[in-house]
Image 1 (cartoon, rainbow, N blue to C red):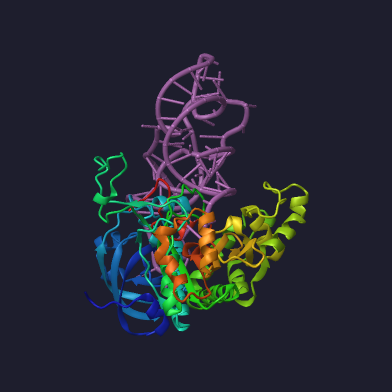
Image 2 (cartoon, rainbow, N blue to C red):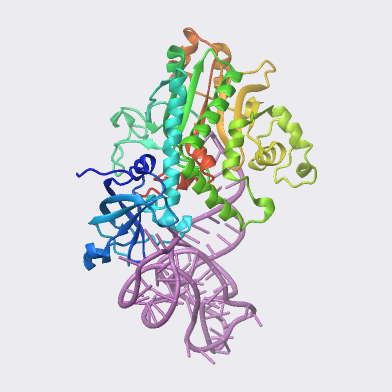
Length: 477
RNA sequence: GCCUCUUUAGCUCAGCUGGUUAGAGCGCCGGACUGUUAAUCCGUAGGUCCUAGGUUCAAGUCCUAGAAGAGGCGCCA
């Protein structure tokens, strides 16, 4: 291929007077003269000025929205107002035509629903270009954060033979012929004939395996796809999503909370610095959207919201404190909650979390020390024998962004909990060995990556922040 | 899985208590235009009113069922 210059680079270095070749996709063609060209490297279009005397009528006709072109010419200071620089093209090659009668993207605003239906082309819009560039920067910032602090990136299995993770319904993985399933003598599926010789599933969490690595390498994290076969139909659940799960040895719940808070502040600070243009675009988009809403339903301006995360400490309260606040709150006393707050031990509902985060504290809230009855078997029992060392980070607009805990390192207590919660101890010996040999206090958390992208971009549907969303009834592409 | 709402031109939508030939903006197509910024101006074309059944003299409009989409709840990250 011939050399090309990416627009992002070109706008940084401002090589005025140079001859360059730009390759990208036409957004609009105005006045038979001005092409707004985008190559995805940056949200900004480059204006390509067409010299009509130099171009055939045929080529001119083929410069349509969506067409791929290569434009070569001199870069000059723009005479117009919308941009500082423009390319005066003396050569334009159409690499790929785009029929304007059938190309779904028009040079106008489209609804997110329409773009979801045309998911294969939505990358070519400003909004989705911005979202996926920000998604990249967030992923990079997460790796950088952990790497700079001596964490090792650990890959835990995607196909798992462990069925005791307890984090939700699982997708089965099998090569058995579904039309002719081998059966044992007592009529059960004969998994000994299956690929792995036993039932296997797609992972719902890498935590248990990460604990194995952490109790040797001290500080590790996973960042990979996870799968939940729940029939969840909401704006914040996916069947396939990416999760970040650090695990730290010789650490307690406070260390865990500090790590999570520092990480969120770091990665958000990172995108504020490195994805400024994209964030500004999304902020403006959100602002326009909010104009149609009544005053009391409007949310914080995006950039201020993100700046607030970086600059302010998160609120930290125990479940019991949260329970008291909620029980004595106005909406509870006035019967406004669908689920009244009465009995200690109840799980907090979305409406309760929203009240705490959006009305009471107006910033992220970390709730700790939940009743043992509503949390997982591996969470460390507190001295009160009633609560466990768990923590959830709740953020405005989304709810639970992070869920974590200090892990139960005491073998006898862990075994007792597993028995109480019907976890098959025999199948978990590999996990229990971390407590049998050289057990140590350790902690970790899980961060839903798409929920982070949702929060940072200000989008409202999680299906819009992952390139190829998977949810009940839908697995396109 | 449960609840609510939506479905009218390529897109975004209007269409009142059922009543002639279903409208607008944008886009597309044709024309004009060498400083435009979702360009502008002029002109044309474009509809299985989601599907099936029903009520009625008459259904885009009312009823029933289904499909698709959105939002809320639950499960959680």
